Structures are given as structure tokens and as C-alpha cells.
Amino acid sequence: MEGVYMVFDPQRRPIEALKPYVARQLAPMKARGVPARVLVRPTESGYVLWCYLSPDAVHATGSNAVRHALALALADYIVAEREEELVRFCLRRAVRHADAGDAALILRHALAHLGAGTGEDAEGRRAKRKRLLAAGLLSFLIPGQPLVLEGVLRFRLRAYHQELAHAVEKGIDDYRSEYQYREFVRLLRLVVSGKPSRMAHLHVVYAEEGGVRLFDGDLRPIEAEAMRAVLREVPETLEDALLSALVALAPERLTLHVRTANERAVETLCRVFEGKVKLCPGCAVCAALDSAHSASQGAQGEAEDRLSGYDGEAYRVEEG
Image (cartoon, rainbow, N blue to C red; front, side, top):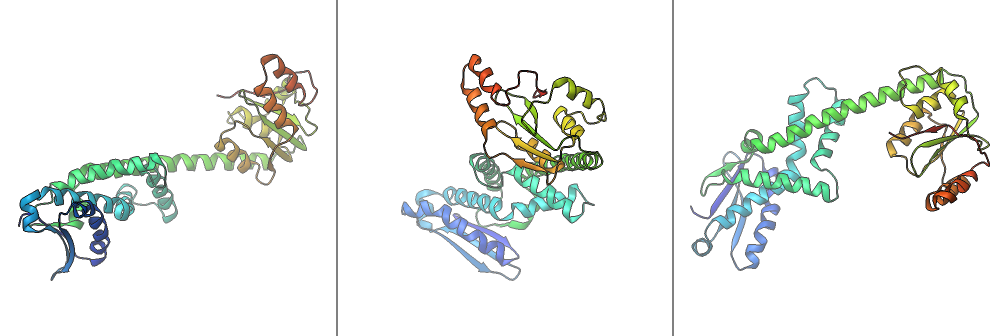
């Protein structure tokens, strides 16, 4: 039965969902005047999707055109409609005793590695797997013989399943890192809640040229020597310099003047000092930082002096 390809599945829903993907891949052939058709028909044990050319079209173009179109359609369908289900299957095999909440978090991380969402990078990852799938499926598309969709999807396509398994492994790693991060934040929050406050209001200024500076509520720089004396009381386990300084001071209010800080650093401060953090939308301090960044080296010092009119050394935390 040259030019006739069949995909069998015991459930109607997957086959019906596959049909528009096949029709989309056949559309260019129809536009060129090649009569290709796709039909779904019931059988005693399930449903079969038929994809075929007329005998005249097979003679003129060969059956490879519809075979490749069906392989591409199956690849599109699997990535769009069945991939999350397959990742869940891989996840159950990799992590047998995870509770529902943990499994959901790992799944979210795994899908992110596979390119869930929009953007060029996500689309590129999906396109790579579609090419992998299409190449693997071609060997199972034999004229006149049905491809058993569920069996091929679950137990064949080894290279594709390796991609999914790798994403699950990355998802588990991300979950563990996220868990360690949450525990780290919880510990810092406990430390902060158990310490008497040394300062009513603290400003954290992220400078454009790198590093962080600390100012009190009147925008006076906190002197380096004084800060070093405070840090001697910080537990050794708190290695991050900025967090150590802020935890040691335990301010009642914390204002962040953000220009270059990464989102994770800001998120950590907001979590540790929950309910005490305000993100500055723009003020004289921020304006001075902007002008300092755009000015020459000589003018930079003058602009920085406008932060407080202080000529001494502010406590500075360098990045990295």
C-alpha cells in the first residue's frame, strides 16, 4: 500500500488531536496540487489515522513526501500535546517517593529546561527536539503498516527520552538548589528576628561601578571601621558580606536603591527582612549615582559627595 500511512491508538482523543497537525503539514503539498488526505476511522480495538496520497500522486511524487510530512506532524503533536505527560512519566521513575508539592516543583523546573514559554531560546529547544523526534519516527512509518502511537511514544525514541530524562535531572538539581536557598533564607530570617535592632533605618545603595554602600537613615555613610567591629559579632556561617552586614545591623526599615543588583539578591533581602524592605522608585541618591556613572572620573567623586556631604570612607561591599 504505497503512499498510505497509518497511526493507531486505542483512544480517540489523541488521534483526533493529531489530525490538525497532520493537515497543517500536508497543506503545502495540497497548495502545490498534490492531493493528500488525512482521515480518522474506528477499528475493533481503537482508532486509526490514515494519511495518504492518491495512486496517481504516489506515482508522480513518490510516498516519501507524505511520510516526512506525517513524521513532522507527529513531532509537532508530541512536543505540543504529549510532552508534559511524558516528562511526568520520567519524573515518577526518577523520584519515586516525592510528594505532590515537590514533584510539581521539579516538573516546573524540568519543563523550563525543555523550553516551556516563549522566546527564541525556548523555541530553539523545542525545534531541536522536534527534529530529533521526526528523525526517530521515520523508521516506524512503513507504508501499509500501522504505527502504534502509544507504544512508540512510551518505549521507543530513545534519543528523545534521553533529552527528557536529562531535563528531569536538571529539574531535580534546580529543586535541590531552591530548597537549600529556602533553608538559607529561613535561617537568616530566624537570626534577624532574634537580634535587637541596631539601626532604625538603613539605606543600601547599589553603585553602577559595582559594589554596595551602606548609609544610615540620614544618608550618612556607615564608616568601614565601625562596620568591621559590628561584623565581628556575626556567626561564621554567614559568609556573604552584604547579608552579614545587614543581619548584624538588623534594621527596622531597609531601603534599597537599586541600579545594578541582580534580581535574586533583591529577592533574598526582601525575604530575609520580610515586611521591612522598600524599593526606592528614584530619589536624590539614585540621581547622584546616575550622574556619577555618566560623569568623568574627576566629576564622579563630586557627584558621589552629594550623597551625604561626607568625606570619610563608607562601608563598601565589593561584588564577586
